[in-house]
Length: 233
Ligand SMILES: [Zn+2]
Image (cartoon, rainbow, N blue to C red; front, side):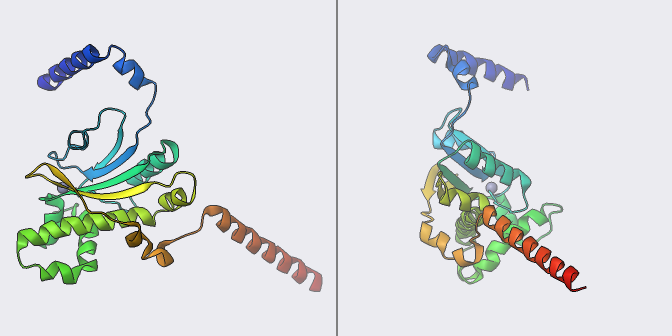
């Protein structure tokens, strides 16, 4: 721990040498362009691999960079990033050699985390034919990492947060990247809009205002029915 505090002091000195107002400026607020959803793996540090500094990237990390629709943590980060910070680009970043992805494919129990890994097993089910068709285990897992990123970008598109943003004043761009730990390079999977709109007829929803209108119509209809029943009694 001593080392961390010492490193911190050295870093502060270095930043202040470059710009004496560096921290005062940062303290005024943040306006990051990016939201980064990555794996918790210590070898995938969001800022270092993207060359972004403090204030430039809002970050959420979990095991295997998942977008799970019951995860209040992820959803809160997403809503705040999109609606308040108004980020413009959302990146789901997976990485080859991901332990979470490998564990999901291994068919063993690991305890509590199995519930989380089930979400990756769902990705295997969705792409079972392609997954089982790859003979080499290393290649199969590498492809699963990519499939998982693509499905998590899709999962973003399924949220009402992203759907409303796309129709409103802040149409964010969604990206799927994979980081190669062995090379240090990021690969863009080019998860395009066509892929997102494939399932629009299933996952596309109208905004709440409409739901409220429907509800009001239903209440009015019920009231009318009540009044008629009263009159006829
Ligand atoms: Zn990982």
